[in-house]
Amino acid sequence: MAITFDAYRAQLRGSLIQPGDPRYDETRKVYNAMIDKRPRLIALCADVADVIASVNFARENQLLLAVRGGGHNGGGLGVCDDGLVIDLAGLRGIRVDPAARTVRVDGGCRWGDVDHATHAFGLAVPAGIISTTGVGGLTLGGGIGYLSRRYGLTVDNLLSADVVLPEGRLVTASANANEDLFWAVRGGGGNFGVVTSFEFRAQPVRNVIAGPTLWPLERAAEVLKWYREFIPNAPTELNGFFAFLTVPPAPPFPQALHLKKMCGVVWCYTGDPAHADEVFAPVKGTEPALYGIHELPFPMLQRAFDGLYPPGHQWYWRADFVNELSDEAIARHVEYGAQMPTMQSSMHLYPIDGAVHRVGRKDTPFIYRDAKWAAVIIGVDPEPANRDRITTWCKNYWEALHPYSAGGAYVNFMMDEGQERVRATYREHYDRLAQIKQKYDPGNLFRVNQNIQPAGK
Ligand SMILES: Cc1cc2nc3c(=O)[nH]c(=O)nc-3n(C[C@H](O)[C@H](O)[C@H](O)COP(=O)(O)OP(=O)(O)OC[C@H]3O[C@@H](n4cnc5c(N)ncnc54)[C@H](O)[C@@H]3O)c2cc1C
Image (cartoon, rainbow, N blue to C red; front, side, top):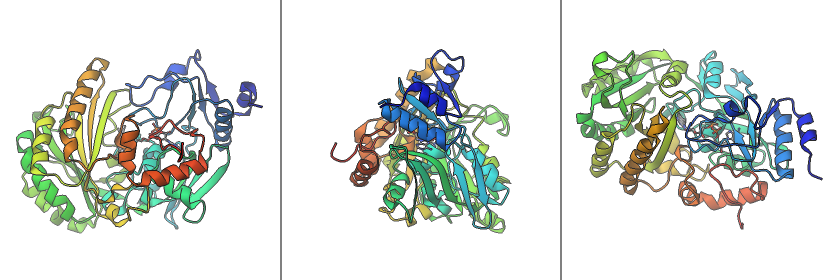
C-alpha cells in the first residue's frame, strides 16, 4: 500500500512546504531566476532519515522527484514542476580529519562551507570558482576549478559517497564497496540516488598567489594565441582561466577601466612563493593593462566572484570541450566576445590538463580527459526583460564555435539540452552508465538531471 501523505509528514524532522504556504515562493526558487518551477511538495530534509522517507514517498506515490543540493544548476535541475523536491540544505555537517587529510561533507553543503572548514588546517578540496555552488551537483558532474591542473577534478579527490538508492536503502560507494556505483557517481550526475555524504581527499593549500590580469579587447586575439601556448607548458602549480568580461564598476578595479569590455585571465598559483616571480614573469611580459596578482587565503579567492554573481539573476549557458584553439576559432571568439550583451555576461576557457590528464579516460565517466579546455558561454543579467538578449547572444556564440569543439560539453555547464547532448557528453561511457543505471535505478526515479536512461528501456 502506498505511503500516505500523513504518514510521510509524521516521519519527517524537517519541514514540508506546499503551495499556499507563505514560504512556498521563496523555497521553490533556484539560483537561476529564469527557472520558474512549481513543485507539489518541497521537503526541507533535516537528516538522512528524512531523505530516505522522501525517496520512499516519491517512489510509492509515483511522484516526479527532484534533488536540490546548492540549487546552482543552469538548467534548474534541482527543482521540478508538480513533483517532490528533496532539498538537502539542512544537511550541512563537515568533519575534517587533518591527520589523514580527508574531509567528510554532508550532501547539502556549499563549497564555501568546505573551504571554511578545511582552511583552518591548511587544506582544500579542488572545486569550482564560486563559493555558493553546491558540493552535490558540482561533484557529481566532475568539478573543474583553480586546483584542477595540480590536483585533478573534484571527482578525482572523491574517496567515498553515501547514497540513498531508489528503494530507500543507504549504501556506501568507494573503491572497495559498490565499485560500479562509485565509478558512476564520479561524473554521472545525480542519476543513481541521493548522495547524503561525500568523503574527499584534501590537498595542502592555504594561501595562494592569485588574481586577474586584464588586457584591452583589441589585444584579445594576440592574448588568446599567447595563452593557448603558455598554459599547457606552465607548471601545474599555476592555473589560469581565460575570460571575456566587462570590468565591474567597483574596487579593486581602477575607475578608468570600469565597464570596459576586456579580456583577462584569472590566475591561481599554489606553488612555492619563492618561485612566484619567475612563474609569473611571462605573464607580466605581456604587459597587461591590469596586473592584480597578490597573495591571499584560498577561501578569499573562492569568494571573489560571489558578489558579482548573486542568486536571482537570469542565466543562459552553453558549453563545449575544446581540443585545439585554432586561429580561426580565436577569430570567432574575438567577434562574439566583443558583443557581450550585459555586464555579467562572459565566456570562460578552463584548462583541462596536468593532473586531469593523468587520470585514465576509463577511470571515471568524465571521458574528455584528453580535451585541453572546457569552454562555457554565459549570458547573465538581473533584468528579466533582457532574457532574450542574453539567450540569443549565447546561442549564436555557441553555434559559431561548436564546429571547432570536441563535440560534447562538461555536464555541469549545460542547460536542459536533451538526450543527444547527454550522449555527446559521455560518448562511449554512456552505455556503461546506462547498465549501472539499470542495476540501481531501473524505474528511472532519478530523472530530473542530465538523464542516463536505464539500459534496454
Ligand atoms: C555561478 C556559478 C559558477 C559555477 N562555477 C563552476 C566551476 O567553477 N566549476 C564547475 O565544475 N562547475 C561550476 N558551476 C556549475 C555547477 O557545477 C553546476 O551548476 C552544478 O550542477 C551545481 O550543483 P548544485 O548542487 O549547486 O546544483 P543543484 O541545482 O542543486 O543540482 C544539480 C544537479 O545535481 C543533482 N544533485 C545535487 N546534489 C545532489 C546530491 N547530494 N545527491 C544527488 N544528486 C544531487 C541535482 O538533482 C541536479 O540534477 C557553476 C555554476 C554557477 C551557477
